[in-house]
Length: 151
Image (cartoon, rainbow, N blue to C red; front, side):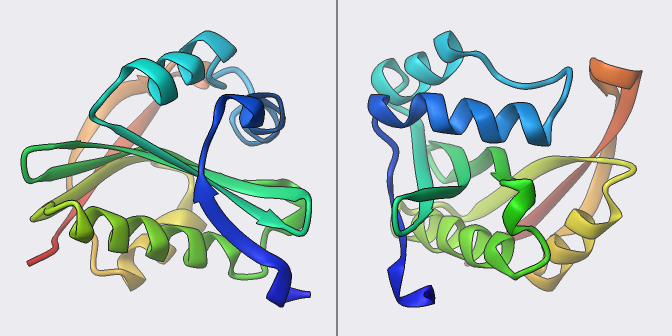
């Protein structure tokens, strides 16, 4: 079954499936079709990838790479596939891509309440670097900024 696992660049035809994962993962803060379309078609700093198991969408990850900084814009795993290390595989893939693109640092924001994600990011060497107050509109939750040197 894991032999069918594929991570590939996101294309416009993936947006509907990605929106479903977004809505399930970020109620109240999910991105829109317009945002994703802009990111994958018009934003030359953006790099988005989908994870598939056969023809089933498992997750999505996106990042911006500007000069030598990589910023994870979002990462989400479908609730049906959580707890099976797919998030670690997808995040590890994104880190390797950032390195391939020449990034020297990687950062992201994570909900203060999302302890599971914070633990995963720590496994990859990310450390907390600050707080963004009320960063998430839904429930007015703070974000912890985490980062790691890649070089």
